[in-house]
Image (tube, rainbow, N blue to C red; front, side, top):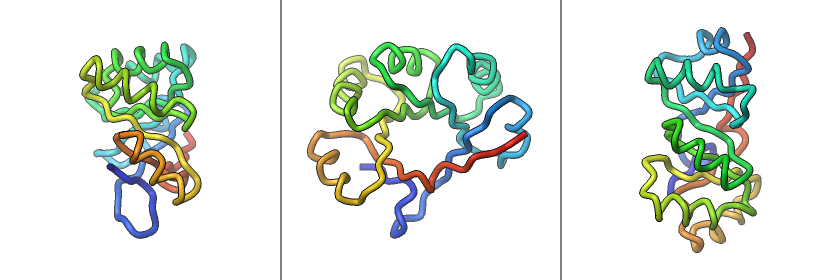
Length: 130
């Protein structure tokens, strides 16, 4: 299991950006984070066409499928969607890793038992402004 943002484990950060200009304020090897939505397609397509690593937040099965089709490296889902998301990723052999956004360490065990690829704490996501 991959763990991002835990105080014991050194890990990369994800950079939440509101627009294309904000990408310029991230490190060159940054993973760009966005919630999947039609409003964010311009930024998503820009990141993909520039071969930037992309993490997309998904809140439905359809969002998960879109995120994979848009070449996301990570798909971040709420805990309620974890098992379904992981089953879909395994069934369709996604390249993307399924991460679940958590706030408590106690959630790690439950998600590990479900076989989820990884978890991410809020402090692993850095909000970038333009």
